Image (cartoon, rainbow, N blue to C red; front, top):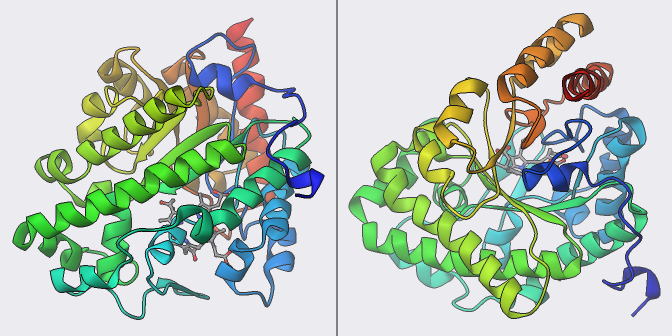
Length: 365
Ligand code: CP3
C-alpha cells in the first residue's frame, strides 16, 4: 500500500480541545466546529464540486480529503468531519440513491413493503462496499497533519430507514411511519440489519483513523417519545455499546461518540444514558435546561440556531455569549443546532468561531 494512505504513523495531534471536552476534561477554551462545515456556503466548495456527481465525489478519497480540509484553511475550527454522506449506507445495502441538484437525495426504487426487504443484500461486505470512505479517512488524517481531530459519522438506523422507504425527504414521513404502525416486525428487522452494518462501518472508520464518531438521528423529531423508545433508542444504544465492546476486545483505543437526535429532546434523559460521551442538541432546547436534564452524565454539543448566522456579526457574538453562559465552559463543544445553509456568509461563520473562542477564554480565565 502507498505509504501516504497507510492507517498508521499518523502525525501527532496538536489540538486536542475537542477530544478533552468530549471526555468532560478541562480545556483552556471551548472547542467549536460546525455541522456541514464543508458545504456550498464556501465558494471554493462550489467551485470544486461544480459539474461533478455528488456520490462520485463521495467515492473519491482525494476529493473527500480536499473538501474536508477546505473549511479548516479558513477558520480555526477545533475538529474536522470527513466529507461523505449518511446515504452511502443504503447504497452499501444495494439501494440506488442519487443526489438531484436543487432537490436533494432520491431513491428511484424505495422500499414499498416488507417483501422489498428481500431486495437488500443479506450480508454486506463493508470493506468492499464502503472502503472508499475508510481510504478517505486515512488520507485525510495524514493530510490534516495533526492540526485537529477527525470525526467520522453515520446515519442512525431509523433515519436511514425513513429515507429508504420515503425515497427522499418528506414533511410527514408518513410512508416510513406507516411501517412502524403496520409492520413493526419488518421495521425491527430492517433496523437490526442497518445496525449491524453501521457497527461494522463505524469500526472500520476508527481502524482507518477516525478519532471520534457522530451518529446522526436526523429524523428523531418526527417520532414521539413512545415510538422513539421502541424504534430509535435501543438501536442507538446497541451501536455505541457494540462499537465500544469491539474496540476493547481488539485492544484498540476507544473514541468519543456523539449522538445527535435532532428534535428529540423529549428523550434527553435517555440519550444521556446511552453509552455516548456527547449528546448533540438542536436549537429548540435551552442550554441550562439541557444541563439540568443530563445532570453532568455527558458532554453537550450545539446548539445555536443556524439562522442566527444571518444576524450582524456583533449580534452573533452576543448570542454566542449567552449560549456559552448557559452551557458553561466545561464538557461543552460549541456548534450549531443543525447544518450550515448554502446562503450563509462565510464571514459570519468566522465571527461565530471567533466569538466562541474569545468568550470562552474569558470564562475560563
Ligand atoms: O461538513 C460536513 O458536515 C460533512 C459532510 C456531510 C454531508 N452530509 C455532506 C453533504 C454530513 C455529515 C452529512 C450528513 C447528512 N446527509 C445528514 C445528517 C445531517 C442532517 O442534515 O441532519 C443527512 C440527513 C444527509 C442526507 C442529505 N445529503 C441531504 C438531505 C442532502 C441534500 C441537502 C441539500 O442541501 O441539498 C445531502 C447532500 C449533501 N451532503 C451536501 C453536502 C455538503 C450538499 C450537496 C452538494 O454538495 O452537492
